[in-house]
Image 1 (tube, rainbow, N blue to C red):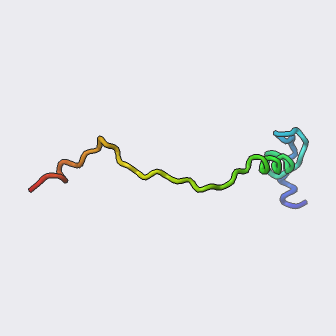
Image 2: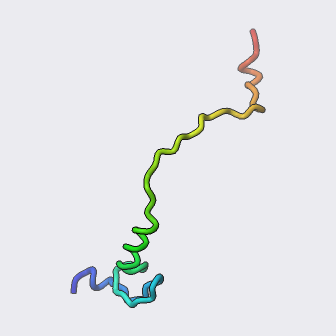
Image 3: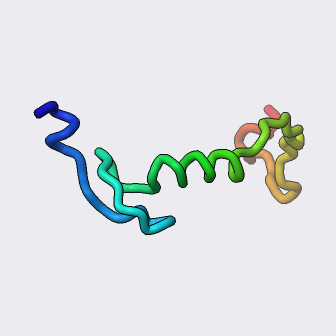
Length: 67
Protein backbone atom coordinates (compact mmCIF):
# COMPACT_ATOMS: atom_id res chain seq x y z
CA UNK A 1 0.00 0.00 0.00
CA UNK A 2 1.42 3.38 -0.98
CA UNK A 3 1.56 6.37 1.34
CA UNK A 4 -1.02 8.29 -0.75
CA UNK A 5 -3.44 5.35 -0.72
CA UNK A 6 -3.12 5.03 3.04
CA UNK A 7 -4.13 8.66 3.60
CA UNK A 8 -6.95 8.76 0.99
CA UNK A 9 -10.43 9.69 2.20
CA UNK A 10 -13.68 8.22 0.89
CA UNK A 11 -16.48 10.80 0.90
CA UNK A 12 -19.27 12.30 -1.18
CA UNK A 13 -18.31 15.30 -3.35
CA UNK A 14 -19.73 18.42 -1.66
CA UNK A 15 -20.76 19.84 -5.04
CA UNK A 16 -22.30 16.94 -7.00
CA UNK A 17 -22.71 14.25 -4.32
CA UNK A 18 -20.75 11.57 -6.22
CA UNK A 19 -18.69 9.23 -4.01
CA UNK A 20 -14.95 9.78 -4.51
CA UNK A 21 -11.68 8.71 -2.89
CA UNK A 22 -9.11 11.49 -2.72
CA UNK A 23 -6.31 12.59 -0.45
CA UNK A 24 -7.94 15.90 0.55
CA UNK A 25 -11.61 16.80 1.12
CA UNK A 26 -13.12 18.98 -1.60
CA UNK A 27 -14.82 18.87 -4.99
CA UNK A 28 -14.14 15.88 -7.25
CA UNK A 29 -11.88 16.22 -10.31
CA UNK A 30 -14.84 16.75 -12.65
CA UNK A 31 -16.34 19.52 -10.49
CA UNK A 32 -12.92 21.11 -9.96
CA UNK A 33 -12.40 21.32 -13.73
CA UNK A 34 -15.84 22.86 -14.21
CA UNK A 35 -15.19 25.43 -11.49
CA UNK A 36 -11.86 26.41 -13.05
CA UNK A 37 -13.49 26.81 -16.47
CA UNK A 38 -16.37 28.99 -15.24
CA UNK A 39 -14.75 30.89 -12.38
CA UNK A 40 -11.32 31.70 -13.73
CA UNK A 41 -10.86 35.40 -14.40
CA UNK A 42 -8.48 37.14 -16.72
CA UNK A 43 -5.62 39.13 -15.26
CA UNK A 44 -5.75 42.84 -15.91
CA UNK A 45 -3.73 45.87 -14.91
CA UNK A 46 -5.45 48.15 -12.43
CA UNK A 47 -4.32 51.75 -12.12
CA UNK A 48 -3.94 52.92 -8.54
CA UNK A 49 -4.73 56.41 -7.35
CA UNK A 50 -1.86 58.55 -6.08
CA UNK A 51 -1.61 58.92 -2.30
CA UNK A 52 -2.83 62.27 -1.01
CA UNK A 53 -2.41 63.00 2.72
CA UNK A 54 -5.41 64.09 4.75
CA UNK A 55 -6.06 67.84 4.83
CA UNK A 56 -6.42 68.03 8.62
CA UNK A 57 -2.83 66.84 9.26
CA UNK A 58 -0.61 69.63 10.59
CA UNK A 59 3.15 69.85 10.94
CA UNK A 60 4.79 69.18 14.27
CA UNK A 61 5.06 72.41 16.31
CA UNK A 62 8.67 71.68 17.36
CA UNK A 63 9.76 70.91 13.81
CA UNK A 64 8.24 74.10 12.41
CA UNK A 65 9.61 76.38 15.21
CA UNK A 66 11.80 79.22 13.92
CA UNK A 67 15.03 79.98 15.82
